[in-house]
Length: 402
Ligand code: GLY
Image (cartoon, rainbow, N blue to C red; front, side):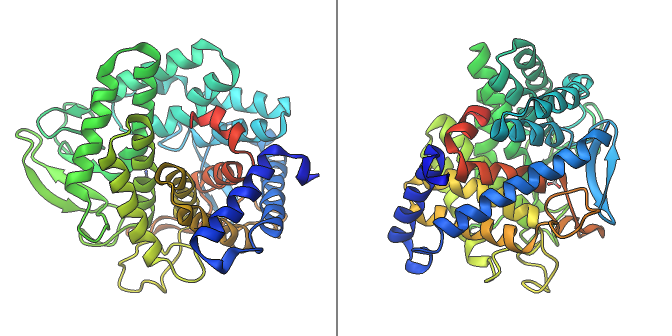
């Protein structure tokens, strides 16, 4: 059955080519058995969604003792639940997933005009942009463009960055830029592409250039936060919110950067974004332990023997697959397969009947001691995205515009 699937044949060819070019380790190992493991893992994800979705009327935020707890507004995570259902629909063609995706995405509608946070890409890209790409219904596109219009209001022209936190007009966090914002920029490139208005893309490029010049240390590691004087745009310096310290390297932030810079390279072809993505990827890959699951902060004093963050692994796997194509380097693809295989072998919730999520061993915020060894909707979403990037690259391209 696998042999008749053109997407999976592409996977096998690429895997073997990648393995041959990069390292003998995966030759023969990654093709058939990993293909089966990945297919079974995605089947499991769809089965879990089918079990849980009928009882979900809000947005999963994290698990507590294997059950989702919810954030009714969507918080910053509200795009991932509809996003997972779009991916399940893409994989299976089952209209029930489409119905759940639409119902859930529509609940985000009031957030289109929310100018109080930077997370509008996280909210509207996997949900509304994907909805537009898969259905062609322009109301999804128009809503996503509205969200992009809200996001660019947070741009600080003096420091050339998008402010991460705090309501506009309030002083707290007015000069804060964070690595995560790299993931919100593709909403802006989408808005420029759809409207022909260059302002969205200009803000995205300016923010990415600032992130590149202020965040990336010579060794390729990054802090979570960089602070500016919001009035003059002058540097204050690196800081952290979710990492161990201003000099550490929070693994999920690093993963957001790998994914985000690669996306910006794909959209603009600016070589400095490819260079940035490679620096971040090379640092993170060097820091990975033989189990291939990122520790929550690569520089916590207990690293590498500290708590893990599987969500960082899933995000990084997606970014590395994209980076492999962008850079022409098969070794990134091979590294992504290793991470994905480790996630599927050691982090799935398959053996628990009562679990409501797909991927275990996530860490939400170790620094303030909340959400350790939990499941996270972004862990589940990016695991599914990574599996589809390997198993069905042509289909996932339709959803996320690769
Ligand atoms: N964007 C927030 C986080 O990654 O936890």
